[in-house]
Length: 150
Image (cartoon, rainbow, N blue to C red; front, side, top):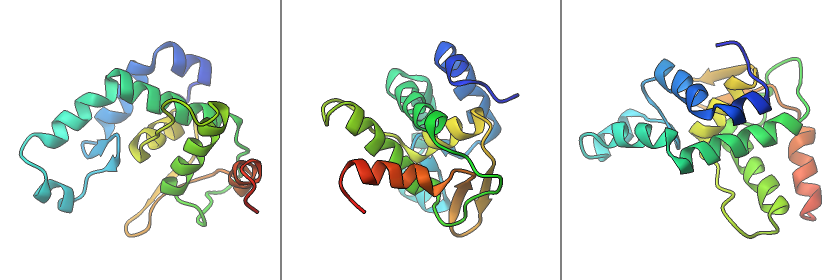
């Protein structure tokens, strides 16, 4: 799939989510399922979680992640200092600030990964350390600065 704009993702989020979900059979809203997940979860749980990705809550998470990514400065190379698990927290803080702390601002790591790929970020998967993208640390600092953390 060719990268989309935020407006295109917001206009047809289900097609975008389905595309990236279908490319990775272990992807769910919370990230990528591991053998640990599969051993702990009852049979069929991963499929339930994957199906939820195109539900209202899943669409909202991907959209929130995409809105954060859209305004964040990018870098030419992948940033190996801040993984997608950290970026998903930055996206949550971004929306918490926008909403004044009221409402749902949750973003799962899997939702962040879908939004990152859809908007054309470079995404790499490290076998031990997780996923990384080409976002500038300025995006993380900007969120921290607003909440008074330096």
